[in-house]
Amino acid sequence: MIELEHINKTYVRPSGEAVHALTGVSLRIRRGEFLAIAGASGSGKSTLMHILGLLDSPEGGRYLLDGEDVSGLSVKQQARLRNRKIGFVFQSFQLLPRTSALENVELPLLYSDRGSIRGVGRRALEAVHLADRIHHRPSELSGGEQQRVAIARALINEPDLLLADEPTGNLDRQSAFEIMAIFQALNKAGRTIVVVTHDSEVAAHCGRIARIESGRIVSDQPVAQPKKALEAAK
Amino acid sequence: MSAIRVINHSVRTMARFKLRTGFMMLGSVVGVAALTLVISAGQAAERKTMETVSRMFGDSAILIFDGGGHVMGGPRGQGTRLKLDDIDAIAKEIPNVESWDPQQGLPGGSVRHGDVAEQVRVMGESERSEHVWGRRASRGEYFDAAAVKTADRVAVIGETVVRRLFQDQDPLGAEIRIGSVPFRVIGVLEPWGTDPHGMDRDNEAIVPISTLMRRVTNVDTIASAKLLIRDSGAAERTRDEIRRILRERHALAANEPDDFTIITPAEVRGMVGQIRKVLFLYLPMVAGVALVVGGLVSAILMLVSVNGRTAEIGLRRAVGAGMGDIRLQFLVESAATTIAGGALGIALGYAGARGVAIHMHLGEVELFTAVLLGIVASIVVGLLAGVIPAMRAARLHPVDALR
Image (cartoon, rainbow over all chains, first blue to last red; front, top):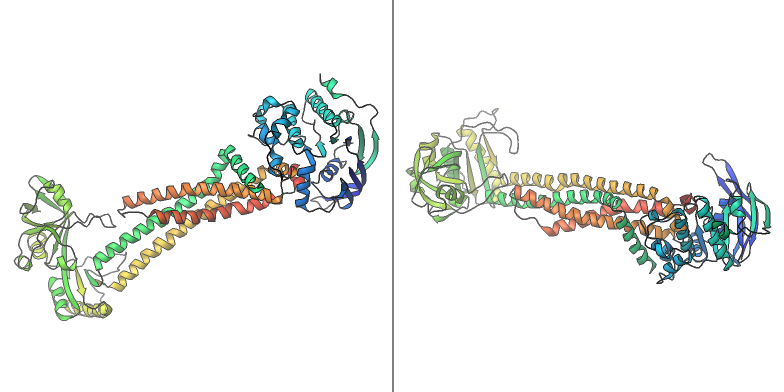
């Protein structure tokens, strides 16, 4: 479903120094996969996620999403594709303050062509077991609950790809397992998920791990026996 | 349409952040209120000034004051040279003078009726004052030439005097005392209300100038005179003739300054022009500065708000908002705050202008002007405050915004 071929990305620091964030990265992700992109901070994993999520454009190479070359799309076309095909989950949840869980979940509908559909937000919240929290504000929810709201938001437009950037980074162990359990369940139901993490414990729950160092993928192999988050969460 | 949803969403977002929204409104409230207040009150002041000026000068009149000096401001020497004979001589020698009325006053003289005493502005005038000033007796009658000639002790009084001294009972034929001199009330002046200086023109008593000078003030000079002229086009020439006659009669040497002041319609137009300049150029400029500062304050708060909301902007971009959506959201926020602030500013400015008008006796304030100005001012503030922050928000790169 996703093909990256020889992707390069260079940043220029304010000091004028050029940083090669990604060098010749090639990566193939099949539909229904659960991939962890693992690496230390500064390894280029966040840059890779931004490119996968169409938040940033690569400088060289090719990016095929669903067979369509998306490397040269305009900012506007990228925004439409993000809205339709990609769901994001961030480390710091990124929920709108003073805004109900339901309205947070329905935010992507604001920018979509199909508009608001009655009950969609509620169903998305039910899917992450927050049916009783739909009118709560973020400040009234625990960290784990907030991240579940964020997952529901990421799923509202039925995206092809769910991208999660250190989704458990701000959570306690228990909540982290809960979130991973939700990801595993979603993946089991056929959702393609990419988790970016520096935490090998998190990566061990995925079906495949691509390790990245200094902007290059240094290893890429399936996990023989992914850990089961649901059991750990109990 | 997606734009309508974004607008809806923006308004709801603002309602959730009342303090932020309130502060952003403040700039437009202050700016719009200042401009509306100044222009609306200025308009009322101008109308009142024109009313007074036309009452004093009519179409064509020349005023002569005792003492030389400047027309507006500056010291005017206490003159003691202008006499009744001077004015009579002018009227006789200059054919352009149609009618004339000399004046001498007793500002704030004590006037009594029975046990009640009041401070009343007592004016001594000729029988022609009715015609020259265009102020008639609404009840009773004005004194005639014979009364002036024989210095009769008769008085025409204003409505305020009637109310204060007579408790609104019929004053005609009653006796009042100006100082210690008894006068008989023969008429009541038509009401004129309050002039722009706040002086109640109904708190006046007019008596024959001869009586006032001989029996009350005991002086032989007059304070001023108003001349009506036939041909207002020749006003400047008439002024020169008056000046020549007065300098001659006062025996002034060539190097001595005038000991009198002549005001012609052209000078009145000049004064009105200066008043207009203050009312419609300088005051609005000050208000305009307030408006621009208000707009900048709103703009800065909006920019601060954009900086504080980068994560939100990044998130919106991530879930599919285009640059246009972000721009629209921030424009809607600034437009809504500016419109709401502007409405409040119009209300405050109008209320303020009415307060000023009441305090300074300027009469009614036009609502239409206030609203129109307020709307224009709001748009100025809105453009100042909204466009730059909105562009900036839209240009934020999603990756930077999410960091």
